[in-house]
Length: 197
Image 1 (cartoon, rainbow, N blue to C red):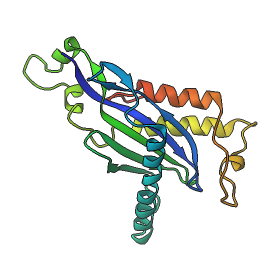
Image 2 (image 1 turned 180 degrees about the vertical axis):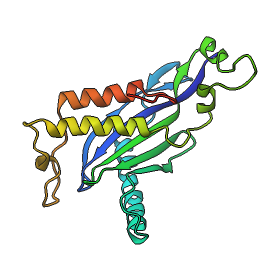
Image 3 (image 1 turned 45 degrees about the vertical axis):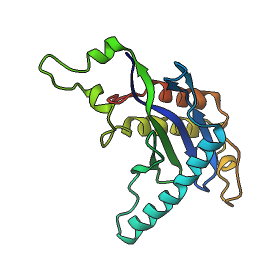
Image 4 (image 1 turned 135 degrees about the horizontal axis):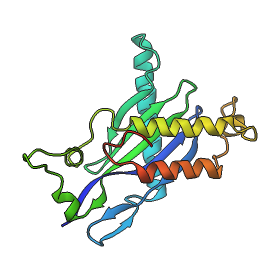
C-alpha cells in the first residue's frame, strides 16, 4: 500500500519588478501510472506563479494601510485546487519567493506508512502532515531559498540590476548553476516536519 504526503511541485523566485527570475519544477507521484511526472505543464506553473502577484500586492497594501509594515512570510497565498497550494514570502527588497506544494506529491511505501501510528495509537508527525500543512511548515524552505539568494547576491560576478533593472523593464532569468542546484536540493529534500534545509 502506498500513501502520499505533500511535496514541493514548484519553486519560484520573482523579482522586485514582478519578473520571474528562477522557476524550478519537481515531479510528483502519479498513482495511476505508478511513476513521477509534473502535475502541471511549465506554462501552467508560470501562470500559477503570476496569479500570486495579485495576492502579494493586496496583502502589502493591507499591511501598509494598517501600519504593519513588511511581514515577510505571507503564508498560504491561495489553494489552487484540492491538490496544489501556493505559499509566499517577500524580502525587504521586494523579491518574492513562491512555493507551490502538491499535497499528494510524494509516495511513501506501506512499511513506512504502517509506522505512522505509534504504540499508543497516536499519529506521528508525518501522518498529520498527510492531511494538510501546519503553520510554519514552509519557513525552512523560505529560509533556505533566501540563503541561496543571498549567496548569489554575494557573488562578485552576479549583477542584480541585470535581473531586476531599476527602470522596471524586464530582466534576465537567473542561470547561475550553484543557485539552480540549491533550488533543486531544497525542492527535493523538503518533507513536512523538516526543520533545516
